[in-house]
Length: 319
Image (cartoon, rainbow, N blue to C red; front, side):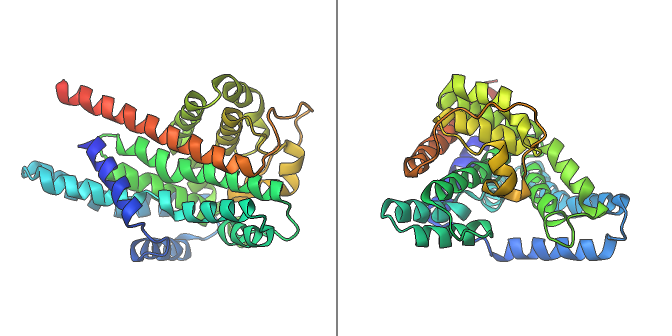
């Protein structure tokens, strides 16, 4: 049921992509803002209470519906419920149209349009960016978004609570951003627990994503870059994904000095510039061709995940 649920949800999303401003997401975002308003009194413990309460209010109903359907022997309805939850928690098509349009614009030599699209996607200033910078940031953003919107959801959906765990992952990822990234929240204690909680929730998935990139790409370079350069990012998860993904494609996804200043503003990640090492990251500077390489890497990694899910589901069914 797990494999088929994910496969059906992916197919439905390809045919009918879920808008990023859909009512479900809008309500959850509004709920998160209300929780911050109600609980934020300037202490980290308030953020912890708000985080657990929001998770409980979203996860418990999801798990309860699934348990009731299984308990009363309604497998087809439970299957449909799984598909709905995966469809709502996946975000494969939320960003792919930006990536595709940027790729088409750069292929046509229209850097102005590419800069505009990148600015809309990343919410950052792209004035004066050259084609290589546009390509690099688009690749970086795409790899991170793929992990958080697809592969991370896959991992947690495999857990015993299935749909509820998928909801937990996506909501935890959103709270880690929403309660830390806005200017008025950046230095507040309220969001500290949300960021730390997502770090541990994402600890295993981010490494599985990096392994998948290595397996379907240049394995040796991916592992080398991961082991030697991932710790140069202050955000460990982003460092692992970008170093492994860049190594797998033979592309240099930002050096520490460049990223610290302007090249890697993805999800407020910065790079640790105190690293005494001066060795540069392996690979070539990103170009328009790197965008096509990214598409290939992501799809191969997706097929690898689906194959593993199929094998796992088959083993469970035969067992």
